[in-house]
Every structure is written in C-alpha cells, then in structure tokens.
Length: 113
Ligand code: AMP
Image (cartoon, rainbow, N blue to C red; front, side, top):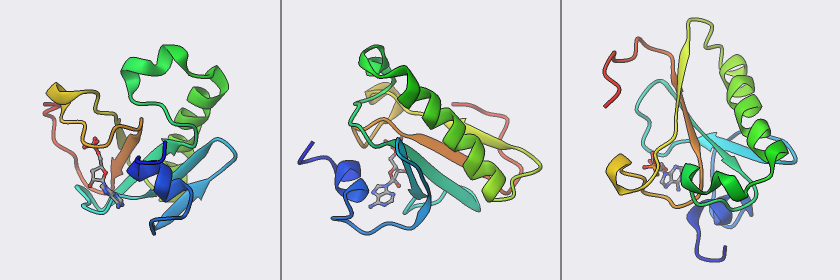
C-alpha cells in the first residue's frame, strides 16, 4: 500500500531500528517505547488488522507469532513478555497495517485495558 507508514518502513523508504527480519516479517523498535523492550512485529504483506486475517495467508500469520517469540528470545526477555495487537478505533489502532507489540524488560501492569 503506497500510503501505508509500515509498508514504507518495510520498503526502507522511512528509517527504522531493525530488530529482526525474515521472508515474511519485519520487526523494529517502536518510536515511542512503552517498556524497555518495545518491538513492532509486522507482516511484510499488507493486512489492515486482526479483523482482516481471514483473508491472510496461514504461513504469514504463523510467521508473525514465531517472530514475536524470536524477538523476545533475542531481546533476552527470559522473565516474560507481552504481545498485543490493537484492532480498530475502540482499541486505539493508529497504524492500519497489522502489527504485534512485543513488550518486556520490566514488570508489566496487571491491567489489560
Ligand atoms: P497502534 O497504536 O497499536 O496502531 O501502534 C502503532 C505504533 O506505531 C505506536 O506504538 C507508535 O509509537 C508506532 N510508530 C508510529 N510511527 C513509527 C515509526 N516511524 N517508527 C516506529 N514506530 C512507530
């Protein structure tokens, strides 16, 4: 998608701090980190959100989850981590390209809202 921020980051048109990549996934540090480790795991192929994964390739979705785990391992999050994806306005999704926040490196809040 030509007007998508994360598509531009994946294409290298906008700089990012790369953490991990493979043929299906690109992962980079969130520009406004909410934890000592805050990485965004993004499928290379444009998918709007969790609401649209019914149209997505199974291998690509599985690759996203495996990449979250690989990022956590690579970042040394041995004491645990959280994976979050915001979907739609009620969840405050601000970038309309599916992404998974990998958060860790501190004791995270019990609150999920
Ligand atoms: P969400 O609000 O769940 O859609 O998450 C979008 C995330 O993208 C936010 O946490 C932003 O801080 C992050 N973000 C926005 N622009 C950039 C950027 N250029 N590089 C890295 N992270 C970004």
